[in-house]
Amino acid sequence: MTELAAATGHNYSAEALHAFDELDRRVNGVFEQLKEWHGWQLFVHPETHHDQMLGMIREVLKAVTWYQPHTTEAGFHMIGRLAKSEVKLIQALCSHKAEEAEHGLWALEDHGILADKTTRTKEASSPAAFAVASVWWRMAQVEDAFGYLGAEYLFEKLTALVTQAALPVIEERDLPRGGLRFIIEHALEDAKHAIFLKHLILDVVTRYPESVVAMNRCFDYFNAVYPLPVWDEAYERAMRA
Ligand SMILES: [Fe+2]
Image 1 (tube, rainbow, N blue to C red):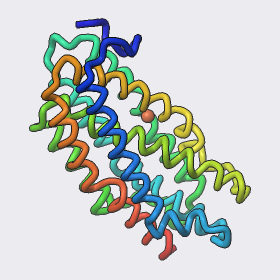
Image 2 (image 1 turned 30 degrees about the horizontal axis):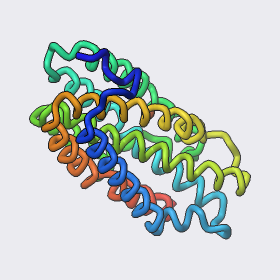
Image 3 (image 1 turned 90 degrees about the horizontal axis):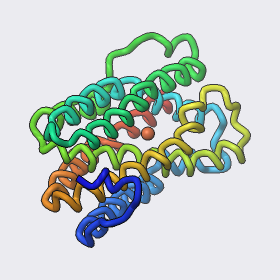
């Protein structure tokens, strides 16, 4: 294998470049859909009260704490099912997933800061967050392991787009920064992670053109439960609070 063409960006096939553009276009489509969603419209509306904005952030973070440990463990399981000759790919993906592992704790800390005493108690997962964990574990057990890259790209690129769009709103409205570490750090981190995954996707599809089918399929499975079902629940909880 060619030292994970990741480092160079060279020698990718035209098919791989096309497949990646299509995947990227699909994430942008999910983001456009999200911007039309009533929860996002409320978040960016200039007259929305700070407490409502922070309440929505708090509830999205709560959802992260519900699914993230499970998507992390399922992700490691799926990476572990890659062909054992893919040493550099496995190393690269494990290293990235290890960095991600901590992010559920950032969400937990931020949620603790934003939550009042009545909402700090440990609750069972919401149905949509449970579905996210379930989809990831099912993919991890039965899907083509290259499909991981499609689902993970949706995770990383969408988080980069959402946090980068949320930051200026937070700054304009001068929201208190306590409890916003997850958003602030992801605006930078996930942009880098999305580029990292882009090169892995280009490398893998160049070497295994058929892998794009599983990547798109896993993208679809994950997108069926994320982000809107999870965020809709978060919105409803925030409005009830
Ligand atoms: Fe990330």
